[in-house]
Amino acid sequence: MGSKNKPLGKQFVNEQLSTRSIMLVGEYVNANTKTLFQCKDGHTWSSIPSNVLRGSGCPSCAGLAKLSKDIINDRLRDRDIELISEYTSVNDRSLFRCKCGHIWDALPCKILEGCICPKCRPPSISGYSTQRPGYFYVVEFNGFIKYGITNSPRSRMQTHRRNGMIRVVEQRYYEDGEIPKRLEEQISTKFGGKFVSKDDLKDGWTETLHPDLLETVISTLP
Image (cartoon, rainbow, N blue to C red):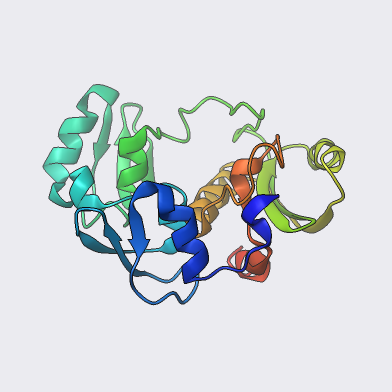
């Protein structure tokens, strides 16, 4: 399964970034501790390794360093979404409001990438509905872990078992279906995903992580 058996560390991170002209130049502590990165143009910035591994890049090259509340709202004007709290950075959660009056907190970078109001969003491809009670779960495959959400844990676990031997590590029920969805977004923001490829896990590969993060992920759950 490729890189999933390699330990996390500076060398591992730079191997994963080698095709993107980005290097980890600071000290590596863990996947969720900020450190310094440098792009091919010499710009340096501080970020969480897991965020960079899952696709975030140099803010100077992307023009994100020049963002402000007015600029963000101008970009969101056609999408009927408004940033209503103060803006600090693309990686600090802020409050947004949609045309229906729903208010939620999210990372500005995610909203600019296309994320929409969670209450207005239709059910996902997997069929998860925030209008029903939901479950947040963590399962362990051979060599990696997967986190996810479902309204029907029994059928979801059956699907995972068809992909290989699993151990259900955590399965938490929430009457409010919004909570599991919010937890999934928070875990994705903190720790990333895509530890294995689609060839390794066709259903849910984007929410896979290094096994060393298992206890850390579980400890963040309310």
